[in-house]
Length: 147
Image 1 (cartoon, rainbow, N blue to C red):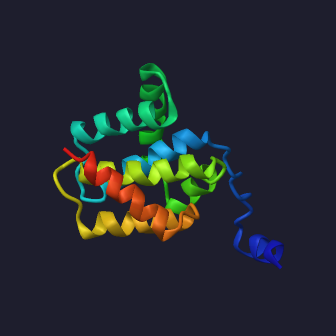
Image 2 (tube, rainbow, N blue to C red):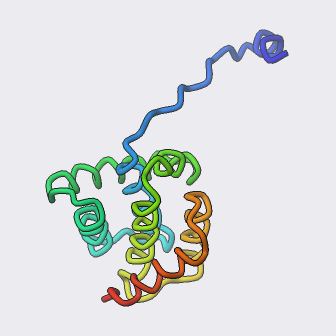
């Protein structure tokens, strides 16, 4: 039936292929999106994301900068959070929980989280299959390390 409508309306464009993304670059994009929830992406937040990549995933500083740059581009292109979390879900549970902690750290980087940032983190946690108890522990750890 779809072929009929394609011929009828002249739209025979194939669907774009699903891109295979590096799960760490997708995670960096989620961290960038968390920083953008309040409408501002400050150097403080990008520095925090680079630090999270180094400490949570044992990346070198150079690798973290490269992953962050790709993550920024992905966040700019992203149409929905689900497209990114699909790739991040390939990471082990402990690393996904670390990403949730990182999301909270980014949201606290400017002093305090707003309700929209909290909502974003909850949404991402559910998409990454992180339960509420694990998420709450990640939030508490992030609060203890907040500036």
